[in-house]
Image (cartoon, rainbow, N blue to C red; front, top):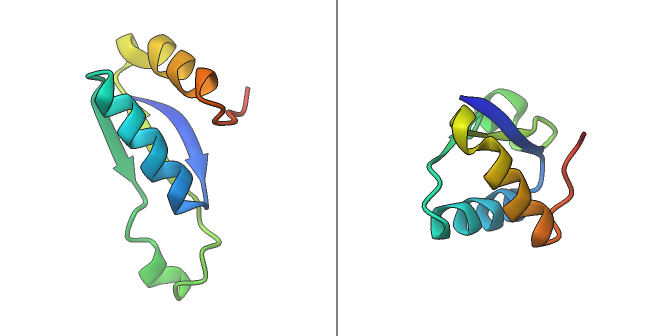
Length: 71
């Protein structure tokens, strides 16, 4: 698994997940329940992971739909 996206915005995570699942790319969300540790203030980012073989295509899907990715 390789990290694709990291964000504190749950709407970006949900949108990215929907886009990738629409392209039949498996997505795994991690750090979803970290709000328990941070007190629900949203400072810890959530991350999306994809299979290494799907990383290039997943990146292209997100960039084509205007989701900003770190280099």
